[in-house]
Length: 82
Image (tube, rainbow, N blue to C red; front, side, top):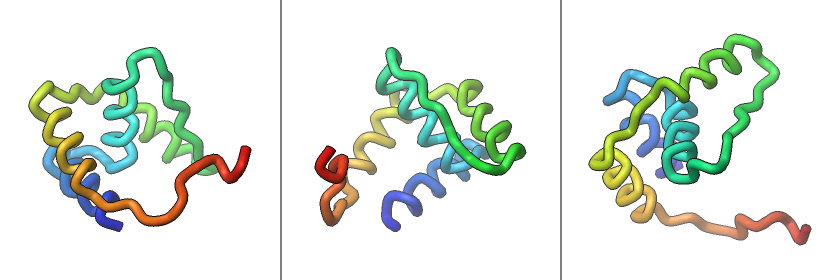
């Protein structure tokens, strides 16, 4: 939950959704990767695609990275043995 809370606060400051921030971060951090947001809800898919319009400045990316690095993650986060 700490990561979700942090993303929600960051998203609120930019007036976007946490999912959009997550997708914009991934696009900025890994420019050769294209995130494909999934959902069963058509409106949510369209909303998530707006991540491509979000610009994260260097300072914002640094702040996001710093806050993510401070969040503790518990448990195994691998591919489940694949």
